[in-house]
Amino acid sequence: MSAGCVRWLLSHTVRAVCSSRPAYWTPTLRSTGLCETRVIASSWRRSAFSTEVPEEQQVPPAKKKKQDPRAHASISSVGRKIPHREIQVISEAGENLGLMHRADVIRIMDEKDLKLVLLSENKEPPVYRLMSGKQIHEEQLRLREKNKSKAGPVQVKELSISAGIASHDLSTKLKQAEIWLDKKHHVRLTLRAGQARHASNLDTALEQMVEQMNMMVAFVSKPKVIREGQAAMCILRPPSAKELSQKAKNEAEESQSAASRSKTPPVSNTDTTEEFVQQ
Image: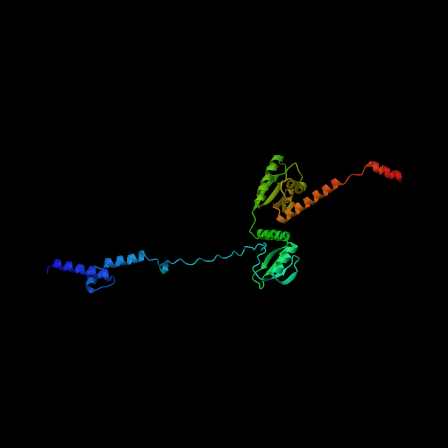
């Protein structure tokens, strides 16, 4: 048999063996390397169409986000859907009402027009408190001010004014201070002494300038004389929510008292004269 016939017969034998047994190897096939392409193609097809994910490529589970320790819990009403059957209840006056069924709590809420606030869910039974809408609002303001106080350092802006400043320039300076205060910055206001004003009056003059501002401000440091009487300085801050609420309350009381005084009829001179004659 010629060498060409032997080669042809060997190649057909290799194809038949590789098609039926892709992982079958013989010393003759291993030496010729004729089945290598078949085996590689077969493994490629299995990897290309396989839905299994290799262990090294598996997506790790998502990590839980850690809660920021600086975050403060807010306070709000839980409504009428109380998830627990029996709860520990604190009254709106701070009195411990003991263990109560949620149906009884809802009845008290309806009778007194109160809301229920969760105080501690980790205790057994959980602790709730009955509060009015005004109490919840005041507590929210208190927590907001507490969070602001721990938010971080406050930026202090510098503003210098000469004692002989013109009224238009003073108005421009004060408007700039108001812009900074609106952005929750503090403002260090310095009034420098001039020839037209005595140094002893600088603190009073600075306080009068602050009173010309179109917004309510509060003092971190009240006006005082510095630099051996050559200047006066004060530090302004934006008012707190409590201070704004108190101001609105005072203005409402003043307007109410002014309205009541205007409704009181004045005493006429004729009535006074008649009373004097009768006596």
